[in-house]
Image 1 (cartoon, protein in one colour):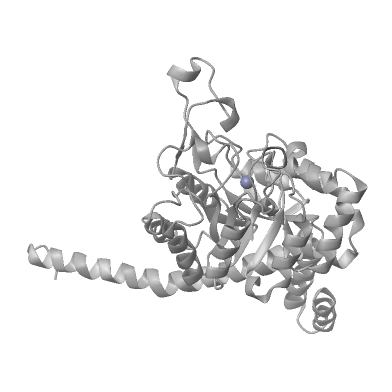
Image 2: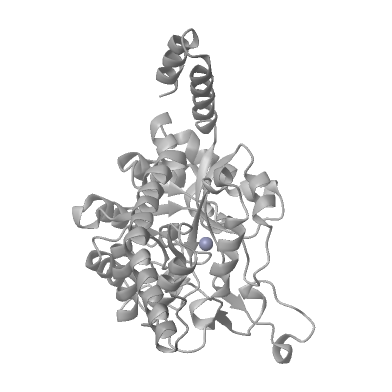
Length: 387
Ligand SMILES: [Zn+2]
C-alpha cells in the first residue's frame, strides 16, 4: 500500500504537484499507522465508581504505543453504603461487602467522551455498550435506545459479565445465568445489528482445584459452549479465555480451548489475552508461555490482545500489561505476533463497525421517520400544524 502510493506520488510529482503531495502524506500516515505496538481490544475508561481519566488524557497514554482501543466503562457500580463501610469509601468491588448495581449512565459517559474528540481521534476508538442487566428481557431495548441516541458511535456490546468470581454474587436480584433467555435475546440482537460482543464468563469456579477435586468438567464450560453454538451469527470474544484472579486454568485447559478453535461450529468465537491477574497463568513460567504460544501459533487469527487496565492513572500503568506479555511476544513468529497485537483487532472491529453503521442507516432512519410522522400527526390533530 505504502510503496504503491509512493510510486504513484513520484509519477504525479511532475504532472500534478498537489495530488502528489496528498499521496505522499497518505503514505506517511500508512507508515505511521503500522508503527503502533498494539491495538487494545479490552479497555475500561472508568472503574467501579465511574472514575477514570478523560479520553483526551487517555489518548496521550496511548501515545505511539496503542493504535486503536475498544473503550467502555464498567457497568457495575460499587455502592458506598455508610451502614457497611462508614467513612471508608470503597473504590473496587473487593473493598466492600456492599452490593454492586447496574449503572446505565456509563454508556452516555463513554459516548460523550468519544464525541468530544475530532473525527481523526475518534477513528482510534471503538466504543462499546455495557450498561445493561443481562438477566433482563428488556436489556435489548436499552442497547437499541443507546444506538438510537448516539448513532455513529458504538461498535459492540461488553465487556459484560455472566459468571465472574466475587462479582456475580454481589449483584442483588436475579443471578446472571448462561441459561437465561434474556442472554439469548441480547446475543440474537447483537447478531442482527452486527454488534461485536465481549463476554466475561469464568470457565470454572474460583479455587475449583481445591474445592471440587472430583469434578472433571469445568463448571461453566458446557453451558457456555451451548450459548456460543446457539448464536453462530454473532461474533463473540470470550474475555480472558475464561480465567480470573482465582480461576486458574483447569486440567486440559489448552486442549479445551483448542477443541473450540478447531470446531467450525465455533468460527464466530474469538479469545482475548488480557488482564494482569491472568498473565500469571500464561507467562509465569517458560513452560506456561510455551503452551500459550503453541495455541496462538495454531490459530493466529483467533486471539486478540487487550490490556484490561481499568482507569489507568498514567502511561506506565496503562502499558504494564502489554510488556508483562513480552515472553509471549518473544515466542511468536513475527506474523503471528502482528496479527494478535494489531491485525485481528483491525479486521474484527472494522467488520463490526461497518455492519453497525449499515444497520443504523437502515433502521434508525426508519424509526426517526416513524417518530416524525407521529409528531406531525399529533401536531395536526391539535391544530398546531404550521402549514
Ligand atoms: Zn475487563
